[in-house]
Length: 403
Ligand SMILES: CC1=C(CCC(=O)O)c2cc3nc(cc4[nH]c(cc5[nH]c(cc1n2)c(C)c5CCC(=O)O)c(CCC(=O)O)c4C)C(CCC(=O)O)=C3C
Ligand SMILES: [Fe+2]
Image 1 (spheres, helix red, strand yellow):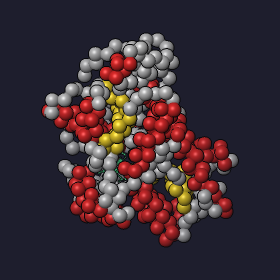
Image 2 (cartoon, rainbow, N blue to C red; image 1 turned 180 degrees about the vertical axis):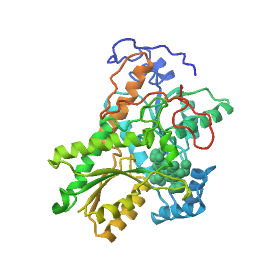
Image 3 (tube, protein in one colour; image 1 turned 120 degrees about the horizontal axis):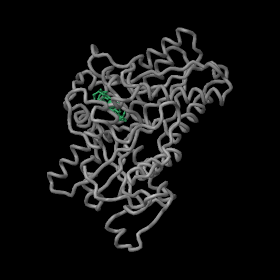
Image 4 (tube, rainbow, N blue to C red; image 1 turned 90 degrees about the horizontal axis):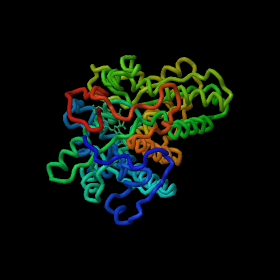
């Protein structure tokens, strides 16, 4: 990777300058502002179907080259058809996109925001083509996945490499893309998630509230994928569940502590559980599953459970189906009161966090040493992934934004 631009604002990170010549601003959008050297932000997400006829082609996109059993695909297709073939994810990304633009404008940050997906329109390659046509060359990327791991980090960087390869094949100008660090421990993610947990507790009948357990949930992944998640020099790599699990546990513990503080209830039991398992039955994936967990704690006498979907940035189908439909049905069958915490979505504290992450990385790229906000025990994640970070479980493939 080469970058011709030299730090344009040496020294104080607070300086905000505009080019004196408006024509210069037109040729290098945003490049001289506080987000320099970035010209634009790309919101990079998973994508989802928006009509019944989209469901099968969407699932084909998701599963191309992966050994997902046909049975599982039929089952997941049913989840989408139950909601009219519409995944909530695209609408939520449109809301996040609008909220980010509003936040940036409200803070005088002149940085255009675009949106592209891995598996459905607007496809990443089309968005990058549009960004190139609009004159952008250096792009910050926010993936809508907060944690380390192949699916949430490297796979997006592989998608970026594929899309940039396509643009190069079309003879378009070269773009440089930098993926922003994992944000699971940024206060702008931790605090809305904590408030959502408190609100969900409040939604339980008062008689069971103080005894309610917290079940932090995230996407299950194969054990091997979890164990190899994170940078090779990350102390969590090699612990059970790797950085993927360590990061979730770090956030869960913080929320549990904040909830104890706010409610005055000490020692409330909590655990990290998993959902949305796919893959072949003989391949080990992270457990326990949320439904098995509900059964187990009910049998052990738990009066209620709050499900806290810390693994999901917004109400994806995994939240709408696996939690709000399947896990709620299991709880009803058991007679176990449950509540589900809201996801962070377009919370203004989260959009502010994204702005801070862009400005932080921009300052770092200019050679400054910005404050890197992080709560919890693990500290801020690396900006640039190592070549051996979160390896592809099938075969190595080119990925961007790595050392
Ligand atoms: C860690 C993780 C995240 C969180 C990080 C992130 O956000 O990226 C995530 C997100 C998502 N996963 C999603 C949907 C699907 N994931 C699948 C399959 C898989 N996911 C995996 C992991 C993850 N997935 C894995 C290891 C597989 C097995 C195949 C493979 O190795 O890739 C399949 C195939 C069928 C099935 O097996 O279930 C579908 C349909 C949607 C869209 C939901 C909507 O429409 O709202 C979203 C946001
Ligand atoms: Fe998934």
